[in-house]
Length: 386
Image (cartoon, one colour):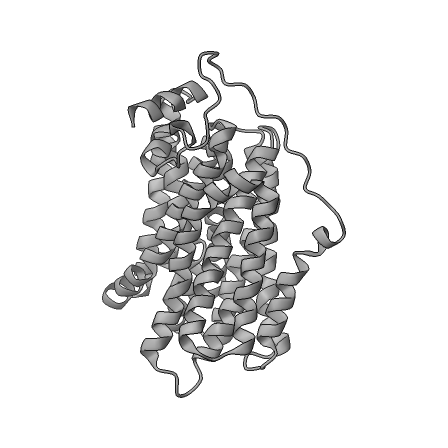
C-alpha cells in the first residue's frame, strides 16, 4: 500500500523525474541492507524483540510521509521502509523454520505465503478505497502498521520455540557468538548444501514481483484492453493464492526436490506455450497464466522448506538473510533486462527470462536428486572448507 501511495504522489506534476527515480531506488537499497543487518539483531535480542524494534522503524518510516514533502526525507523514509520489510521477512521466515517440524514445514510456509499475498491485495484495495491522491493515504498506511502492535498491546506472546537439538558430534561444542559456525552463511555454502534452494529462491526474485510489474506491459504490447490486462494480473495473483495450501500439503508428504522438479517443468512448459500460442486466444491466455501463477509463485515456500530441512537450527537466521538477499538481487536486477528483451524481441521475450529461471530450477532439482542426501555433518564440513 505504501509503495503504491508513494508512486502516485511522485507522479504529480512538477516532480523532477530524476528525483522520482532516486526516491524509488531507496527501497530496494534498503531491502538489501535489511537482509544483512537482521542476523546480529536476532542474535542479540531474539526474534520477538527484534520484530518489535523493526516494526517501530517501519512505523516511523510510514509516519514520516505524513509530515513532509521534502524529497531527501522521502528517500530516507523509503530506505527505512525497505530495511524494515526485509528484516521482518528474515525474522518471520527464520522463526517459522525454527518452530516448524519436517512434517508441517511446507504447510506453515504455505500459510505464510498466503497471508502475504492476501495482504498485498488488501493494500491495493485500501488504496482504491481511500483514493490514490487522498492526503489521508499515508495516515491509513501508518494505521495498518500500528495494527501489528495489537497482539503485544493485548499481552500476547509468541509461542515458545522447541529446544535446539544437540550437535551430532560431541566434540563440537556450542559456538560462541561471533564464532565461525555462527557467521552468515554465504551463497556458496548454501549452494553446496542445497543447490535447488539457492536457484529456486533466485528464481522467486525474478518471478514473484516482476511478473506483476511486467504483465501490464505484456498485455499492452499484445493489444489487450486495459480491463483485460488488469484481469490477467489478477488471474496470476489468484492462482498463486489458491495453489499455496495444496502445494504446501504435498511438499510435506513427498520429497520436496520432486515437487520443485515438477514445478520447474510445468513452469517452463507454460512459458513456452504462452510465448508460442498464448496470443491466439484470450481465454487460452488466461488459462496458461493461471497455470503459470499456480506453479511459479509456489516455488519459493517449497524451496525455503527444503533448505531449512538441511540446516542446523543455529544457522536458520543467517541462511534466511542470505536467501532473501539472493531473492532481492533477482528482484532488482531483472526488470530492466526483461523490458529490454521485450523492446528488441517482442512481447513473448518476457517469457524467455521467466522460462529461463524455471529451467534453472528444473536443472538444480535434478542435480539435487542425483547426489546423496545432505545432512548437518556435511554442512559443518562445508563451513570448514570455506
